[in-house]
Amino acid sequence: MEERRRTDRLNNSSPKKTNVKRNTKKTKDEDVLEKNSKLIRDTKSKLNHKNSLEIEFENIATTKPVVAKNNKPSIFAKPKLKVIPLGGMNEIGKNITLFEYDNEIIVVDCGLAFPEDDMLGVDLVIPDITYLEKNKEKVKAIVITHGHEDHIGSIPYFLQKINVPVYGTKLTLGLIKNKLVEHNLDKKAKLKCVKPRDVVKFGKYFKVEFIKVTHSIADSVALAITTPVGVIFHTGDFKVDYTPIDGEMMDFQRIAELGKEGITLLMADSTNVQRPGYTMSESSVGKEFDKIFTNCTKRIIVATFASNIHRMQQIVNSAVKCKRKVAVVGRSMLNVMTVSQELGYISMPEGTLIDIDKIGNYNPEQLVIITTGSQGEPMAALSRMSVGEHRKVQITADDLVIFSSSPIPGNEKSVGRVIDELEKLGAEIIYNQLADVHVSGHACQEELKLMLSLTKPKYFMPVHGEYRFLKQHGEIATQVGVPKENIFIMENGRTLEISKDEAKITTQVPSGMVLVDGLGVGDVGNIVLRDRQLLSENGMIIIVVSLDRRTSKVVSGPDIVTRGFVYVRESEDLMEEIREIAKNELDRCDRENIKEWSSIKAALREELIHYIYSKTKRQPMILPILMDVDMDRYKKE
Image (cartoon, rainbow, N blue to C red; front, side):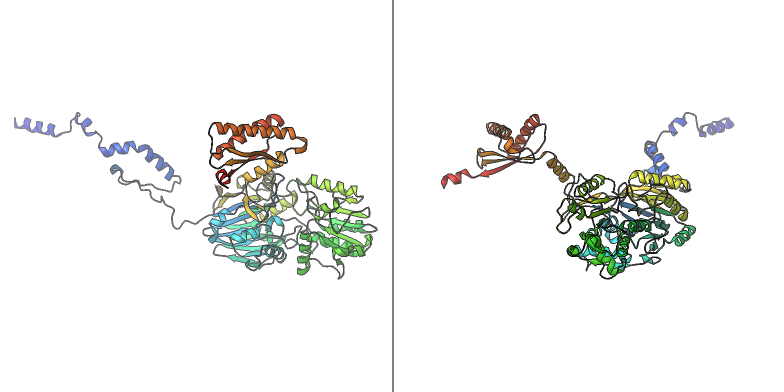
């Protein structure tokens, strides 16, 4: 009996099956855990993007916050190099690129672009540097590759906001100084002169070596930028010219050495990427000038780019051989000629260069005139000569005009128009299609392949060109062995982040264009341009009405004034109808007790827009002007 009781007690102490259900009842903490299980899985998935990262969840049952090991970046993690083009991508001109590592930034080039046809009244287009303004304490310097406007034109506007040292070669700084004098910045700016093979250190992270390249302007350099993640090679604008005018060859040896040491990223000029083969040497133009100048009995006028110093030197050489005097016309041409002579980049016998005012003292066969206007710019010297508006040079049948340039895309009509006007005045014309009087300053396809082969970059970013140029340059890079996944076709404002192990396109920073109109910088935007476009296409109608200040009743008017809409003397009936429509609308506002001026203006504008479009199919800008008159005061007087 005692044995049986002992057995029952043993059985009662054992867990029973019915107790399983009771023991598995969820606690409050377990319920919370289950409800948040999806969140936990998602968090774990995101945090475990690397296999080496271990996640530990602590006190999950008590609903305390999830703690992840290594959730925050390690203080020992190295920052990445950011390469951010703010201009020059998907466009021609406005070249500017910044390189940022940790708390340091250097800027390469700071150029401008010229306005498109629809940018009415705009003088210049400069890059938006909002991102640099927000990080101005990081900016160490501007480094310039050469002295063309699309690489130096925005420097005065940049230095007004961020005054940092500007590094460049002697001629480049000479041209920049001229610009700074015009903006009264020459005393504030810090210009630092360098020469090829110089190495300059900026802060802790950047070191820049200047490397000689050939281009259509003297003193052009490429940049080898040493950073904590490797060497970035920026070609600037270049061509391969084995017989340069100044005798200074491109530094192939140093470029090849850098390629052998290892270049992380190559950034190369894409301007001429659509042209196969090689660019002709600049010296070939001089031979053509000699042929043309010899036995020519006419006055010779040569139009070329103001910054093409090598071209000007060859014109001077040919003039000296034929015992001709040289005169220069055009403000930019005079500036460049003056700077180039002062710095020793253009040489000529004493007495060769004469003032434009003295050309009347010489016979036509004794003169050569170098002028601006090769792109058909309306206000340039050659354009004014072609329409007889230049005060000092008149075109006659005794003139031979040479266009030593090729039209920039979009300027073909303007150049053609100038040629036609010169032909009408009897001048003989020579241009690029008739003789080899121009060569490009940019590398063609085979030269681009040579640059890629010498540098052997790990990553490649084509720069300076429209999208189709950049894309084609990327395709050329694949032909010489750069992996497709290592080629980055960028846009202005996009960030390329480079580490020791990888490169990828990441965030977008503010970028775009700032319009310069006269002394105004950035005060002309899309709305102003739209209004100018509307005014240029359809004109303007102004409705002037005087209203009683107290009652808002019409005292006088409406009077109608138009500009650029119709010729009023031949459209008096239409003007009277517009006046009647405006009067009727004002009467309606009075009857309906509408006294708010904004409502009256809107009603007038709306009614006249519909009426004028129905009568003329035009949409002029309509500006109602309401003036209040204190009639009570007049009555007392």
